[in-house]
Amino acid sequence: MPRLPRRAVLLSGLAIVGLVAPAFSHHGWSWTQSGFFQIEGTIADIYYGNPHPIIEVDVEGTIWTVELAPPGPTTAAGFTEETAAVGDEITAIGNRSQDENETRMKAVRIIVGGATYDVYPDRARDI
Image (cartoon, rainbow, N blue to C red):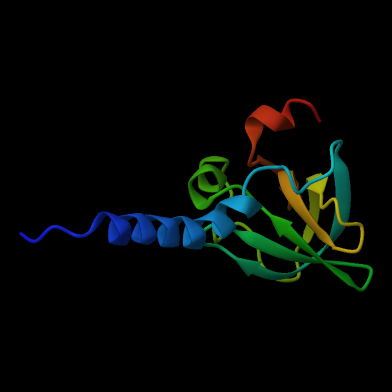
């Protein structure tokens, strides 16, 4: 098997890091404010997939993007693709974006149809 020149291997590694780094930069909580934030509204749209399920919530005419935990932990919390539908009332509690102009939050707890789903149970203990 031919050996790749050291420079080619290094450049390939840097290219991979360059492609993956932006995906990791949005993960975590560094983009959110400290302290809990709550919204109540109507589900306008739901995406259930990777990297995070997302619920678009209409709050008095303003659409908020609510990110949940990755699909595995969200499902483990009891919230699945069949749990909620467009038009359902929802309460989302979590941390909003540090950018005050961005209507986006990362939910720790959501409440739909009277059922509570702690998608980040370790953080939900502080609510």
